[in-house]
Each structure stands twice: as structure tokens, then as C-alpha cells.
Length: 183
Image (cartoon, rainbow, N blue to C red; front, top):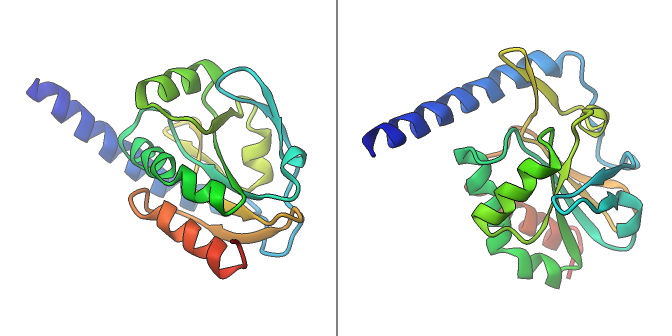
């Protein structure tokens, strides 16, 4: 049992360090959309295989959060906090969409194991992650950096967070929606 804890802590440290390194390495070439820009459109499969398009959420706030890897400590904390606050987002006319470069099957396992009800989108080709300037590299493996984009009901980038802290991020996003005129 102790070895599982040690492995979990080691994995967390590796992912955290990798995210920091990949953020600095990819920031040189990445163009992150700025506040006021039209959000890059996309269609990606979710954990249940359904194709999800950004365009289908016009008229709603969209919390588009990118994360490195399913079933890792920081990503699990972040997902649990978004799940915890799901009803608050719904009350603010907002949807939560998580994106990583993991497969839809990996997302399905993550959602099942962690009881997640919102959509996780599989960007296995990295196109969406790249279009949001969020593709990183960890030890030669492409990952999504931990960045979030709040997209207004009109489809514009309303707020951008880079290198977010998983433990408090949902609270920050809810506060931003409130500040920007969400219900």
C-alpha cells in the first residue's frame, strides 16, 4: 500500500514539473487567443463518443479547460472541483468542457472512476490544443498545458488563465463569470 502512495506522489511531481517545463518550452511558439478574440471553433469526441462542437453552445458561457492527463493527481483534483460546482455553473448558464490529448476511451474510464458528469473532449490529433496555444511537451510526449479559456455567450474569449492551480481554479472561474455579468 505504501508503494502506491509513493508512486502516486512521484507521478504527481513528474507531471507538475513536466507541466512547468512544457509551458515554458511551448510558450515560445504558441499563440494563446487573447481576451476579445473570437474563440477558435472545434468539434471533438467526448467520453461517450458524441461529437461536441463549440458552436452548439452559442448563448452560453463555456468553460474550456485544458489539462495534461486523465487520472493524475492534479487533473483529478481540478475535475472534482468542477464537478462539485456543476450546479453553480448551470445556474450561471455555463457549461464545462475539459480537453486533453487522451483518447475518448481514457476519458470514459476517468469519468466512470471519478463520477464526472460533464464532458471531457479527446483531442488526439492536437489540433484544438494547438489552436488555443496550449500544446506542451513532457519528455517528448505531447500534452495539454493546464490553461483555461472562459468563452462568452457571444463566442468571444472573455478571460484566460494559464498554468492554473487545480485546487482553487473552479472558484476563480465562477467568480469571473459573476464579475463579467453571468447570472
